[in-house]
Image (cartoon, rainbow, N blue to C red):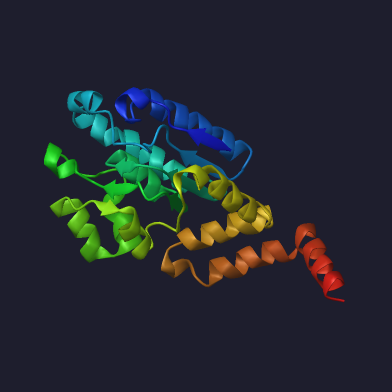
Length: 231
C-alpha cells in the first residue's frame, strides 16, 4: 500500500486530520497485512507537526499520546514498512520515518528534531528510536544540540538504507516492497515480531515462532520448490 502525505501548503505538517487518516490506514493494514510505503509530496516528506495545532495543545493532549500512539501503531504493523523520503523529514516527520522499518531517501533528504527550540521535546519516539538507530552520542547531538543530518550523513550512519536520485525514489521503494513481498508473509510477520521482542524473550520466542512456521504449508511448498530447482 502506498500512502502519500499531501499537505504541500504547510510542507506536509502532521495535523489531527492526518493522524486520523493514518490511523485508518493502520486499521486496514491490520485487517489485511501488506507492505506499507509512506512518502511525501513536492520535495517534502514532512516538516514536522502542525505548529498551529501544537501551540494549542495542553497537558491532556500530551498524555493522550496523539502522535506517539500513531507512530507506535505504525511500528507495530504486521508487515514491514518503508519511508520513501525526498526533502526534509523534521520533528514529527522524522519520528514518522524512524518508526518505519526501512528508509530510502534522495540526496535532498534531511533529518532533524528541533523540538527543544520550540520549548517541547521529541516525544513521539525520537528519544528512544533514534538512539537505537544511530547510537546515543549522535542521537544527543540531534535531540539536544539541533544537529540536522544531510542525506549522505544519514546513509553513513545507516539511518537511511539507500540513497537514490529524486526521480528514482518511487521505483526504488517499489523494488524494495517487491523484494520483501516475495518472502513468506507469516515468516515476515514473525521475524518482525522477533526483532521487536525484548532480549529476555529470546531464544524461546524464536523457538515457538519457528515451530509455528515449520507446520505451515507455505514452508513445505517453498522448500520443495527450492530443492526441485537445485536438482
